[in-house]
Length: 160
Ligand code: ADP
Ligand code: MG
Image (cartoon, rainbow, N blue to C red; front, side, top):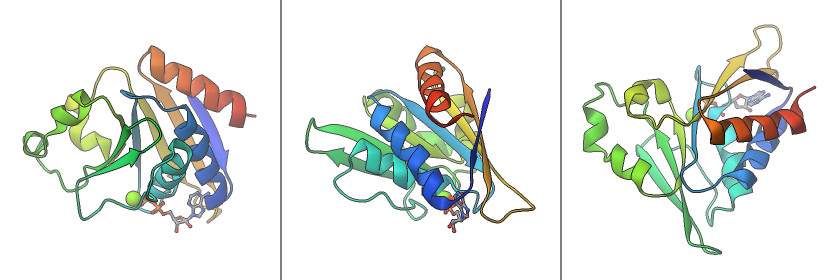
């Protein structure tokens, strides 16, 4: 487990940007934490670093948003599982297809689909600092070799 501190939205975005540059097809990144904790800010940075053709926005009104990259025809999925109440819903939005589709996957509200997650995923929990509006704590946990590699890279770059 690794903890990174962000003191501004821009810094959260930069951490996301760096991760985005490292992402490969098949990587799964789970982002959880309260509303306003910074998950979408982070995701926007990931999209930028990964190189989406269109800026990544909050997917709240669609459950899955697909982003493309012309360069190598890779795909990035941004999933918001917030409104998936029963895990059965996961089937109806084609979750398994997404995990099989050979793209990178970013998931907000991943706890809603916990049992569907591939074994190897990086989990990032965002915590708001009650005493400082612009401070966030990012707690990173890796659940496999690939996610551990990503975690180590983030730690080397942004850890103290
Ligand atoms: P979520 O997707 O988790 O609901 P958002 O990224 O949409 O959160 O919103 C985070 C809000 O918190 C934004 O209004 C952002 O400007 C603000 N904020 C303040 N400090 C930070 C920080 N260090 N990192 C990320 N967001 C921050
Ligand atoms: Mg959000």
